[in-house]
Amino acid sequence: MHKAMAAATLAAALAVSFVLGVLDSYRITRGAMLTGRQSAEEYLLSCSRGRPLELGAYPLYQWLNHNSGPKNKAILLGPTSFFYLQREAVASSFADWNPLVVLFNRDKSPREICQLSNQDGVRYLVFQPPEFWRLSIQYPANRLTPAGKARMDDFFQSGCIEKIMSVQDDQILLYRILPRTNERPTNGQ
Image (cartoon, rainbow, N blue to C red):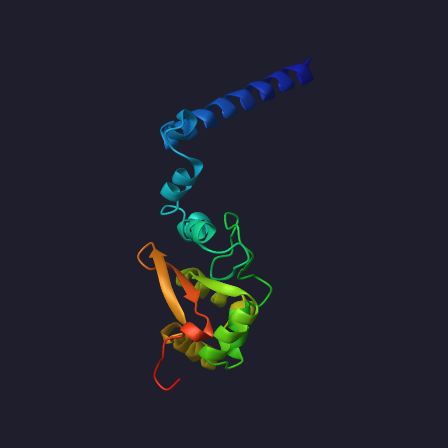
């Protein structure tokens, strides 16, 4: 008897929870997705400002999905989530070194970094400075040496990358790594 009552109570609680969840999602989206007034892409774009860690780079990923070649790779420096990116990507990790961090720490010049990236098919860089610095403080695999930090600063000032777009007041940036023939000249390089 007690088992039957417990099962009925559990089933009722789950049903109420489900109904409340549906009503809450309807309230949040104002029913736009359910009624077809808003696509899933538009909904995710509207949510990206409020959820910078999970969806902050979504507008940049959509740009890459629509404007880059299918074989173009991206390096993510800071973002760890690339669920919506339909391109091959290398992301920051809690345990593995990001290839750019390794190159910065090995004292490679901006030109060498761009050449190595181009050889590997990497054409784009998504940079999320606040998240990169948070990861570098917490996880040794993302730490820059003092010389590496200087090289990173040089890299972002170099002429071998160009800024394509940014979101959230320059908190998340998208760069194109230029092929050697299109590289803009810089001071002494």
